[in-house]
Length: 200
Image (cartoon, rainbow, N blue to C red; front, side):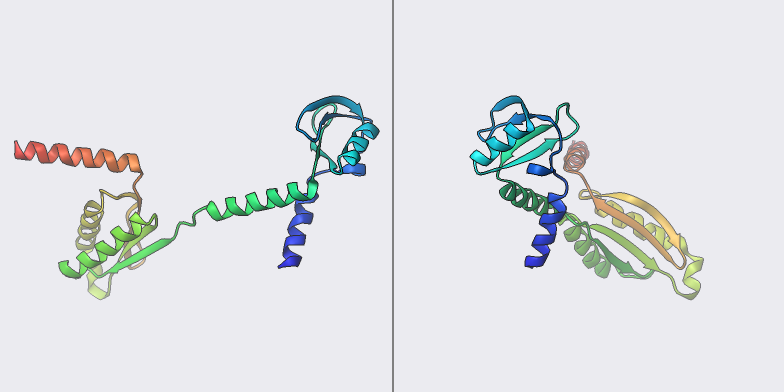
């Protein structure tokens, strides 16, 4: 673990030039308190950093002259690595779940599968719905197509179709993704409108 942290620190540290590694005549300096000191010779900037018992770090090498900051470099790298790690964790991994049906799956069994799909979609996962054909079932793809359309319709309040029904070998499939919050609201409003019209 320590070895890994050390490696990460080295990788991050290599992105910056620090102290004597900054080889320019003068720099625009940001002092230890965050205030703008102005353009100073590199020697003076290094001395200010030493006096503050901190490091001189080049934060904007592309500027003319380069911008350097007096800071605790070890702490800066630690915070940077921590933020990068947290950002990585925050990237949610979208998992693709699957429900498998047969062309003759009865409605009750299909209902359980649709409930599973609804739960997964609400958790933010994609759902792949597949209908596998055997033997002569391939002669009646319209039955499976109707099933997939009905399932997509049943889940339309929480999902949108990413991949429309299509054949892959002996399998027909549809891929559903969680509906955006805005789309959900709109669909709920539309459903309410339809309901109100029906009641009227």
